[in-house]
Amino acid sequence: MKIAQAFDLARGDVVAFVGAGGKTSLMVSLGYELAEAGWRVLATTSTQLASEQLALFPCRLPADTDARSISQALGEKLFVVLHGEINGGNVYGPSPEWTRRMLDRLDSDILLVEADDARGLPFKAPFPDEPHIPPETSLVVSVASLSALGKPLDDEHVYNSAAMIDRYGFVENSPVKSPWLAQVLRDEELGLRGVPTSARVVVFLNQTPERGYVRGRARMIARLSLQNERINAVALGSVRGAEPVLELQRAVGALILAAGGASCPYLDALLPSADGGGALANLTEQMMRSRIDHIRLVTGKRAREVRKAVKHLGVKTAHNRAWKSGGFLSSLNVGLASMPGRVAAALVAPGRAERIPPKLIFHILSAYARGDGDFIVPRLRGDFVAPFLIARKYWGDLAQAPRCSDFSEIIRRFEAHVSYMDADASVSFGHNETASESRSGHRQISL
Image (cartoon, rainbow, N blue to C red; front, side, top):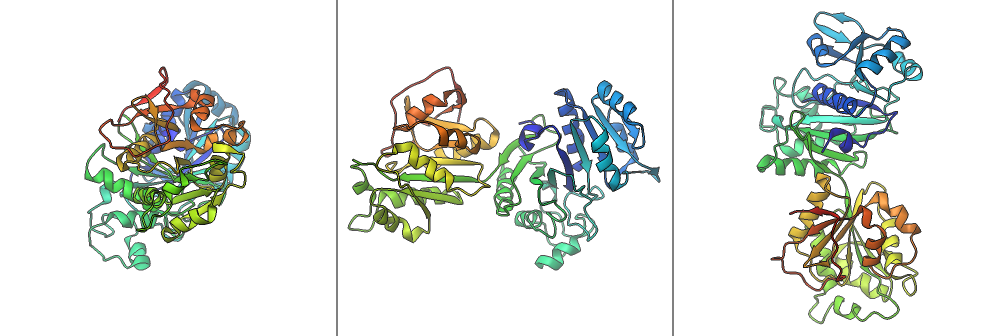
């Protein structure tokens, strides 16, 4: 995945890079990537760069250069860094007031700002006067390198280690652990210090390997970091890799549709039996075991009994008042509307899906994180099987769509956006709501 895709950039953005472990390299790589796409990219620093780092940019100009010359350089080189004073081997940024004036008078598409210093170390906590994020910033990228894992927690290996020790009681000189990175990155007084309230935040975990144990550690750090609602996404990757972003981890919810309909025979099978079991509770537990934090059960017919069946699991419910006449789509829209605003996509499972293999959920979430699709429909031997994944960007269109009786009709309406996944034929499924309709010529995701 490209960096710009992972960061969901738009023309007019001001992007500030903070943290440690690859800020400059990430800013430079993004600048070249955007320039190759035809964007006019300005870069600068609100702190300092090493003077030799100026050679990383295709064009370098003093910040007091006149607007016409800067515009001409942008037209020729597409990627220009503007700097202030050069002194003692360091390049200093222009004054904070300059950023606001520059945005008003220059015709760039985007401004990239290195807004923090870490002395080349892989992990940091800021001092009280750091970082230096311009108030106009629309996206803050917080960087940490996984090369910090296992290194001693001291000032030789970690920037301002004392702040972490004082705040959390970490033991000085002990090996840096994965949860520590997440604790610092999501901390309002450390990793999120100085972030404007209107800015989005994306964490970039640099030096994430393509496979192996450390890749799993990165996913855990991402999951823990996302517990702070200020963080929109966590990118796992390596600035110097051929594919800079391996995964983009975001908050994903799950909907279990158990509203039934005017004539619905399957609810009896879902509710608890005499021995206390129940397919609906089992399905909910499967979603919980997949570490999905935002689960909603949509009720309708016999809502009180359905809620009672999952009460012990502490799952939130949303009631579909139009369950008699609204059909499948009304339940789907009620569930999507109940999701927290930070949820980027939702897994959708009809309540009659008695068993969903955990590894299928894993493959769907992995495909979404890799950017392989954002409207993902698994198929098994030509049949659609649950769960389906639908990104938030489609939810508004679903809310406006005419009534649909089942998911196959929704797929027909959105087929231009659908990515199909071939579910492993060796997986044992329970009874899923399916539509026997095989399609070809669409995006295909391989496991």
